[in-house]
Image (cartoon, rainbow, N blue to C red; front, side, top):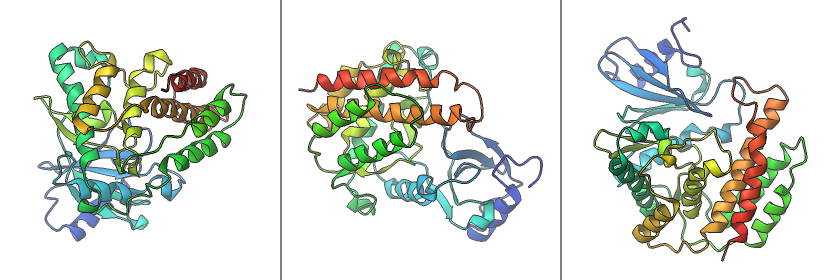
Length: 341
Protein backbone atom coordinates (compact mmCIF):
# COMPACT_ATOMS: atom_id res chain seq x y z
CA UNK A 1 0.00 0.00 0.00
CA UNK A 2 1.04 3.60 -0.55
CA UNK A 3 0.65 6.47 1.94
CA UNK A 4 -2.29 7.77 -0.13
CA UNK A 5 -4.26 4.54 0.25
CA UNK A 6 -6.96 4.65 2.93
CA UNK A 7 -6.75 2.00 5.69
CA UNK A 8 -7.88 -1.38 4.42
CA UNK A 9 -7.84 -0.50 0.72
CA UNK A 10 -4.80 -1.12 -1.49
CA UNK A 11 -5.71 0.76 -4.66
CA UNK A 12 -3.06 -0.92 -6.82
CA UNK A 13 -4.32 -4.38 -5.90
CA UNK A 14 -7.92 -3.26 -6.36
CA UNK A 15 -7.11 -1.87 -9.81
CA UNK A 16 -5.40 -5.10 -10.79
CA UNK A 17 -8.37 -7.15 -9.68
CA UNK A 18 -10.89 -4.95 -11.49
CA UNK A 19 -8.79 -4.97 -14.68
CA UNK A 20 -8.78 -8.76 -14.52
CA UNK A 21 -12.47 -9.23 -13.71
CA UNK A 22 -13.97 -6.29 -15.59
CA UNK A 23 -11.53 -5.26 -18.36
CA UNK A 24 -12.03 -1.67 -19.46
CA UNK A 25 -14.11 -0.69 -16.45
CA UNK A 26 -11.42 1.53 -14.95
CA UNK A 27 -9.98 4.11 -17.33
CA UNK A 28 -7.73 6.22 -15.08
CA UNK A 29 -5.74 6.20 -11.86
CA UNK A 30 -7.85 5.25 -8.86
CA UNK A 31 -8.39 7.53 -5.88
CA UNK A 32 -10.43 6.76 -2.77
CA UNK A 33 -12.03 8.33 0.26
CA UNK A 34 -13.51 6.68 3.34
CA UNK A 35 -17.23 7.24 3.89
CA UNK A 36 -17.65 8.41 7.47
CA UNK A 37 -20.50 7.42 9.72
CA UNK A 38 -20.44 3.64 9.36
CA UNK A 39 -20.20 1.69 12.61
CA UNK A 40 -19.43 -1.72 11.16
CA UNK A 41 -18.33 -2.50 7.63
CA UNK A 42 -15.93 -0.08 5.93
CA UNK A 43 -17.17 1.86 2.92
CA UNK A 44 -15.07 3.75 0.36
CA UNK A 45 -15.91 5.91 -2.64
CA UNK A 46 -13.45 5.06 -5.41
CA UNK A 47 -13.04 7.01 -8.65
CA UNK A 48 -10.91 7.07 -11.80
CA UNK A 49 -11.55 10.71 -12.73
CA UNK A 50 -14.55 9.78 -14.89
CA UNK A 51 -16.57 7.20 -12.97
CA UNK A 52 -17.16 6.46 -9.32
CA UNK A 53 -17.89 3.24 -7.46
CA UNK A 54 -18.37 2.16 -3.86
CA UNK A 55 -16.27 -0.55 -2.21
CA UNK A 56 -17.48 -2.37 0.93
CA UNK A 57 -15.32 -4.59 3.12
CA UNK A 58 -15.34 -5.84 6.75
CA UNK A 59 -13.66 -3.81 9.50
CA UNK A 60 -9.92 -4.10 10.02
CA UNK A 61 -8.61 -6.79 12.33
CA UNK A 62 -9.96 -10.21 13.15
CA UNK A 63 -13.72 -10.53 12.70
CA UNK A 64 -16.14 -13.42 12.48
CA UNK A 65 -16.91 -14.03 8.79
CA UNK A 66 -20.58 -14.65 9.53
CA UNK A 67 -20.88 -11.19 11.08
CA UNK A 68 -19.52 -9.38 8.04
CA UNK A 69 -20.55 -11.54 5.12
CA UNK A 70 -19.96 -9.51 1.97
CA UNK A 71 -21.49 -12.25 -0.17
CA UNK A 72 -24.84 -11.87 1.62
CA UNK A 73 -24.91 -8.10 1.05
CA UNK A 74 -23.94 -8.59 -2.59
CA UNK A 75 -26.59 -11.27 -3.06
CA UNK A 76 -29.50 -9.27 -1.66
CA UNK A 77 -28.58 -6.09 -3.56
CA UNK A 78 -28.18 -8.09 -6.78
CA UNK A 79 -31.50 -9.84 -6.18
CA UNK A 80 -33.39 -6.59 -5.63
CA UNK A 81 -32.14 -5.04 -8.86
CA UNK A 82 -35.12 -4.41 -11.11
CA UNK A 83 -37.66 -4.42 -8.27
CA UNK A 84 -39.43 -1.38 -6.85
CA UNK A 85 -36.71 -1.18 -4.18
CA UNK A 86 -33.94 1.22 -5.29
CA UNK A 87 -30.50 -0.32 -4.85
CA UNK A 88 -27.09 0.39 -6.42
CA UNK A 89 -26.03 -1.75 -9.35
CA UNK A 90 -23.52 -4.42 -8.36
CA UNK A 91 -20.17 -4.67 -10.14
CA UNK A 92 -18.17 -7.55 -8.65
CA UNK A 93 -17.83 -9.66 -5.50
CA UNK A 94 -14.34 -10.77 -4.42
CA UNK A 95 -14.13 -13.60 -1.89
CA UNK A 96 -10.37 -14.04 -2.35
CA UNK A 97 -8.96 -12.53 0.85
CA UNK A 98 -5.48 -12.31 -0.70
CA UNK A 99 -6.52 -9.28 -2.77
CA UNK A 100 -7.35 -6.81 0.03
CA UNK A 101 -6.95 -8.94 3.14
CA UNK A 102 -10.70 -9.58 3.36
CA UNK A 103 -13.61 -10.29 1.05
CA UNK A 104 -15.17 -7.20 -0.53
CA UNK A 105 -17.57 -6.09 -3.20
CA UNK A 106 -17.88 -3.18 -5.59
CA UNK A 107 -21.14 -1.47 -6.52
CA UNK A 108 -22.11 1.55 -8.55
CA UNK A 109 -22.03 4.98 -6.91
CA UNK A 110 -25.49 6.50 -6.41
CA UNK A 111 -25.91 10.21 -5.78
CA UNK A 112 -28.07 11.27 -2.87
CA UNK A 113 -28.11 12.51 0.71
CA UNK A 114 -28.36 10.29 3.81
CA UNK A 115 -30.23 12.70 6.08
CA UNK A 116 -28.89 12.24 9.60
CA UNK A 117 -30.15 15.26 11.53
CA UNK A 118 -33.26 17.34 12.04
CA UNK A 119 -31.30 20.44 11.05
CA UNK A 120 -30.55 18.99 7.60
CA UNK A 121 -34.25 18.34 7.02
CA UNK A 122 -35.33 21.68 8.51
CA UNK A 123 -33.65 23.44 5.59
CA UNK A 124 -36.07 21.64 3.24
CA UNK A 125 -39.20 22.81 5.05
CA UNK A 126 -42.06 20.90 6.60
CA UNK A 127 -43.83 19.76 3.42
CA UNK A 128 -40.74 18.22 1.84
CA UNK A 129 -39.71 16.67 5.14
CA UNK A 130 -43.14 15.09 5.51
CA UNK A 131 -42.99 13.69 1.97
CA UNK A 132 -39.53 12.20 2.58
CA UNK A 133 -40.78 10.54 5.76
CA UNK A 134 -43.71 8.96 3.96
CA UNK A 135 -41.53 7.85 1.05
CA UNK A 136 -39.26 6.12 3.56
CA UNK A 137 -42.28 4.13 4.76
CA UNK A 138 -43.48 3.42 1.22
CA UNK A 139 -40.07 2.06 0.23
CA UNK A 140 -40.17 -0.29 3.22
CA UNK A 141 -43.59 -1.48 2.05
CA UNK A 142 -42.10 -2.06 -1.42
CA UNK A 143 -39.29 -4.13 0.10
CA UNK A 144 -41.70 -6.28 2.07
CA UNK A 145 -43.79 -6.82 -1.06
CA UNK A 146 -40.93 -8.45 -2.98
CA UNK A 147 -41.35 -12.21 -3.45
CA UNK A 148 -38.02 -13.68 -2.25
CA UNK A 149 -38.38 -16.75 -4.47
CA UNK A 150 -38.96 -14.63 -7.56
CA UNK A 151 -35.69 -12.71 -7.10
CA UNK A 152 -33.49 -15.67 -6.19
CA UNK A 153 -33.57 -15.06 -2.44
CA UNK A 154 -35.74 -17.96 -1.35
CA UNK A 155 -32.80 -19.43 0.58
CA UNK A 156 -31.69 -16.13 2.12
CA UNK A 157 -32.79 -17.06 5.62
CA UNK A 158 -34.85 -19.41 7.80
CA UNK A 159 -38.15 -17.64 8.45
CA UNK A 160 -39.68 -20.48 10.49
CA UNK A 161 -39.15 -19.69 14.16
CA UNK A 162 -37.55 -16.34 13.26
CA UNK A 163 -38.72 -14.36 16.30
CA UNK A 164 -37.86 -17.13 18.74
CA UNK A 165 -34.33 -17.42 17.32
CA UNK A 166 -33.93 -13.65 17.39
CA UNK A 167 -34.85 -13.56 21.07
CA UNK A 168 -32.37 -16.33 21.86
CA UNK A 169 -29.65 -14.64 19.83
CA UNK A 170 -29.98 -11.28 21.55
CA UNK A 171 -30.19 -12.85 25.01
CA UNK A 172 -26.95 -14.70 24.23
CA UNK A 173 -25.41 -11.39 23.14
CA UNK A 174 -26.50 -9.82 26.42
CA UNK A 175 -25.06 -12.66 28.49
CA UNK A 176 -21.75 -12.29 26.66
CA UNK A 177 -21.53 -8.59 27.56
CA UNK A 178 -22.43 -8.73 31.25
CA UNK A 179 -20.10 -6.72 33.44
CA UNK A 180 -22.62 -5.10 35.79
CA UNK A 181 -26.14 -5.46 37.12
CA UNK A 182 -28.82 -4.52 34.56
CA UNK A 183 -32.12 -4.20 36.43
CA UNK A 184 -35.09 -5.33 34.36
CA UNK A 185 -33.16 -6.75 31.39
CA UNK A 186 -33.81 -10.42 32.16
CA UNK A 187 -37.40 -9.66 33.11
CA UNK A 188 -37.96 -7.88 29.79
CA UNK A 189 -36.53 -10.85 27.90
CA UNK A 190 -38.75 -13.28 29.83
CA UNK A 191 -41.83 -11.16 29.17
CA UNK A 192 -41.04 -10.96 25.47
CA UNK A 193 -40.64 -14.74 25.32
CA UNK A 194 -43.94 -15.27 27.14
CA UNK A 195 -45.86 -13.01 24.73
CA UNK A 196 -44.20 -14.10 21.48
CA UNK A 197 -46.60 -13.24 18.61
CA UNK A 198 -47.33 -15.43 15.62
CA UNK A 199 -45.52 -14.09 12.54
CA UNK A 200 -47.29 -13.54 9.25
CA UNK A 201 -45.76 -14.49 5.89
CA UNK A 202 -42.00 -13.95 5.81
CA UNK A 203 -40.43 -11.23 3.67
CA UNK A 204 -36.99 -9.85 2.97
CA UNK A 205 -36.05 -7.92 6.11
CA UNK A 206 -33.49 -5.10 5.98
CA UNK A 207 -32.58 -5.30 9.65
CA UNK A 208 -31.52 -1.67 10.20
CA UNK A 209 -33.96 0.40 8.19
CA UNK A 210 -33.87 4.13 8.90
CA UNK A 211 -33.56 7.43 7.05
CA UNK A 212 -29.77 7.68 7.26
CA UNK A 213 -29.48 4.26 5.60
CA UNK A 214 -31.12 5.51 2.41
CA UNK A 215 -30.09 8.14 -0.14
CA UNK A 216 -32.50 10.92 -1.12
CA UNK A 217 -32.09 13.03 -4.28
CA UNK A 218 -32.88 16.70 -4.90
CA UNK A 219 -36.45 15.83 -5.87
CA UNK A 220 -36.92 14.07 -2.51
CA UNK A 221 -36.99 10.62 -4.09
CA UNK A 222 -35.22 7.70 -2.44
CA UNK A 223 -32.48 6.69 -4.88
CA UNK A 224 -30.92 3.81 -2.94
CA UNK A 225 -31.37 1.71 0.18
CA UNK A 226 -27.97 0.94 1.71
CA UNK A 227 -26.32 -1.10 4.51
CA UNK A 228 -27.83 -4.55 4.02
CA UNK A 229 -25.49 -6.39 6.40
CA UNK A 230 -28.35 -7.33 8.77
CA UNK A 231 -30.75 -8.44 6.03
CA UNK A 232 -32.42 -11.85 6.01
CA UNK A 233 -35.81 -13.51 5.55
CA UNK A 234 -38.07 -12.96 8.52
CA UNK A 235 -40.90 -11.04 10.10
CA UNK A 236 -41.40 -7.68 8.33
CA UNK A 237 -42.78 -5.99 11.44
CA UNK A 238 -39.30 -6.09 12.97
CA UNK A 239 -38.26 -3.49 10.36
CA UNK A 240 -41.23 -1.25 11.08
CA UNK A 241 -40.69 -1.56 14.83
CA UNK A 242 -37.04 -0.54 14.63
CA UNK A 243 -38.04 2.49 12.56
CA UNK A 244 -40.50 3.42 15.31
CA UNK A 245 -37.97 2.78 18.09
CA UNK A 246 -35.38 5.03 16.44
CA UNK A 247 -38.00 7.80 16.29
CA UNK A 248 -38.38 7.52 20.08
CA UNK A 249 -34.70 8.39 20.62
CA UNK A 250 -35.38 11.50 22.70
CA UNK A 251 -37.51 9.54 25.16
CA UNK A 252 -34.74 7.05 25.88
CA UNK A 253 -31.58 9.20 25.59
CA UNK A 254 -30.56 7.35 22.43
CA UNK A 255 -28.16 10.05 21.28
CA UNK A 256 -26.03 7.80 19.07
CA UNK A 257 -28.69 7.52 16.34
CA UNK A 258 -30.06 10.06 13.91
CA UNK A 259 -32.54 12.63 15.19
CA UNK A 260 -33.97 13.26 11.71
CA UNK A 261 -37.44 12.18 12.85
CA UNK A 262 -37.52 15.21 15.18
CA UNK A 263 -37.53 17.62 12.22
CA UNK A 264 -40.63 19.83 11.80
CA UNK A 265 -43.05 18.13 9.42
CA UNK A 266 -41.67 14.60 9.85
CA UNK A 267 -44.58 12.14 10.19
CA UNK A 268 -45.49 11.15 13.74
CA UNK A 269 -45.11 7.58 14.97
CA UNK A 270 -48.86 7.03 14.61
CA UNK A 271 -48.77 8.36 11.04
CA UNK A 272 -45.81 6.13 10.14
CA UNK A 273 -47.59 3.05 11.48
CA UNK A 274 -50.89 3.97 9.79
CA UNK A 275 -49.15 4.59 6.46
CA UNK A 276 -47.40 1.23 6.61
CA UNK A 277 -50.58 -0.61 7.59
CA UNK A 278 -52.61 1.06 4.84
CA UNK A 279 -50.05 0.51 2.10
CA UNK A 280 -49.02 -3.03 3.10
CA UNK A 281 -52.37 -4.38 4.28
CA UNK A 282 -50.63 -6.01 7.24
CA UNK A 283 -52.08 -6.39 10.70
CA UNK A 284 -50.03 -4.16 13.03
CA UNK A 285 -52.14 -4.69 16.17
CA UNK A 286 -49.27 -6.53 17.90
CA UNK A 287 -46.67 -3.93 16.97
CA UNK A 288 -45.99 -2.96 20.60
CA UNK A 289 -44.33 -6.35 21.12
CA UNK A 290 -42.03 -5.70 18.17
CA UNK A 291 -41.19 -2.18 19.36
CA UNK A 292 -40.44 -3.53 22.84
CA UNK A 293 -38.16 -6.12 21.28
CA UNK A 294 -36.46 -3.37 19.25
CA UNK A 295 -35.69 -1.51 22.50
CA UNK A 296 -34.31 -4.75 23.98
CA UNK A 297 -32.03 -5.22 20.96
CA UNK A 298 -30.81 -1.62 21.14
CA UNK A 299 -30.12 -2.04 24.86
CA UNK A 300 -28.06 -5.16 24.17
CA UNK A 301 -26.11 -3.41 21.40
CA UNK A 302 -25.28 -0.45 23.64
CA UNK A 303 -24.35 -2.72 26.55
CA UNK A 304 -21.94 -4.51 24.24
CA UNK A 305 -20.35 -1.20 23.26
CA UNK A 306 -20.17 -0.18 26.93
CA UNK A 307 -18.59 -3.54 27.83
CA UNK A 308 -15.85 -3.10 25.20
CA UNK A 309 -15.35 0.52 26.24
CA UNK A 310 -15.02 -0.45 29.91
CA UNK A 311 -12.36 -3.01 28.95
CA UNK A 312 -10.42 -0.44 26.92
CA UNK A 313 -11.22 -2.25 23.66
CA UNK A 314 -13.03 0.59 21.90
CA UNK A 315 -11.13 3.12 19.83
CA UNK A 316 -12.38 6.69 19.47
CA UNK A 317 -14.37 9.21 21.47
CA UNK A 318 -18.02 9.66 22.35
CA UNK A 319 -18.43 6.37 24.21
CA UNK A 320 -18.20 7.76 27.75
CA UNK A 321 -21.92 8.03 28.41
CA UNK A 322 -23.14 5.16 26.29
CA UNK A 323 -23.67 2.89 29.27
CA UNK A 324 -26.15 5.35 30.75
CA UNK A 325 -28.53 4.82 27.83
CA UNK A 326 -29.05 1.10 28.49
CA UNK A 327 -31.36 1.32 31.53
CA UNK A 328 -33.83 3.76 29.87
CA UNK A 329 -34.06 1.46 26.85
CA UNK A 330 -34.88 -1.53 29.05
CA UNK A 331 -37.42 0.48 31.02
CA UNK A 332 -39.10 1.89 27.92
CA UNK A 333 -39.18 -1.56 26.36
CA UNK A 334 -40.95 -2.93 29.42
CA UNK A 335 -43.47 -0.08 29.47
CA UNK A 336 -44.17 -0.53 25.74
CA UNK A 337 -44.76 -4.25 26.21
CA UNK A 338 -47.25 -3.59 29.04
CA UNK A 339 -49.27 -1.52 26.54
CA UNK A 340 -49.60 -4.58 24.28
CA UNK A 341 -53.25 -5.27 23.64
